Length: 295
Ligand SMILES: C[S@@+](CC[C@H](N)C(=O)[O-])C[C@H]1O[C@@H](n2cnc3c(N)ncnc32)[C@H](O)[C@@H]1O
Image (cartoon, rainbow, N blue to C red; front, side, top):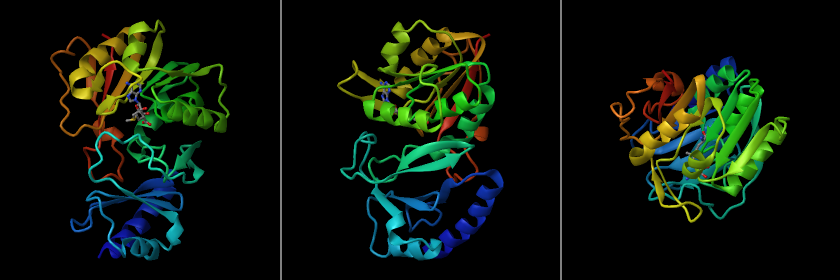
């Protein structure tokens, strides 16, 4: 049953992807209850996540047969029980390889970390940022591997500022910048806790992306970050850095998230999740997103 569903999805989604120039997509997402997996396709390789924490014998060969791919191209992760360790290493090195999306190139690694370097659920939002970036000063907060910054720079941003707490991911972002021929003088990388950055930085931006994790806690920051608790103060701080006529794109993946609309009623904002969650995601609540503009 699982194999047949995969085959059917692959047939449909590869055509769908070809028409749109998309070569990395979500192939399977718990479509059948008894098979609680997420299967993402990255240009001929497969990232398999088991939500139950187990991958029974036979599943990987079944995927290999259904998709007509060698066993080595199927990379497994067992997510069950992992909560806050999302950015930790898995102990494996894996291979870095390059995928294209929207005319840009991104380095992906399906083994080294729990995440791959390119979050597929933000594909539409990356495109939006690329389309809106021309002539703008762009700020990317909680930037991970810098994919929003790549789109912004390629879309004609005058400058991009990419902020993350992790040296590993900033280094990955830099490699993505070099891969895409970006000028490292105009596209700067800053290692900082976003909260601290927002308190101290004196820049002005026309376009900001704020895409925080649900929760973060690190020796490199003071206290911790909780998106539900901290989103209002963080959005307010971003709005202070926004030039007149500018826009802030805010998103997060916390399923139970509630935007404090009352506290934020001084701004114009609207939810854009229906446009930003890609068609290949069955879970329409994979993230929620809003655009804020100053009144
Ligand atoms: C959910 S990912 C962001 C995804 C990214 N916006 C994208 O679409 O590719 C979380 C990132 O936030 C970073 N991070 C976590 N806590 C942070 C903090 N307090 N300040 C800055 N970056 C932080 C992590 O290092 C990681 O790269």
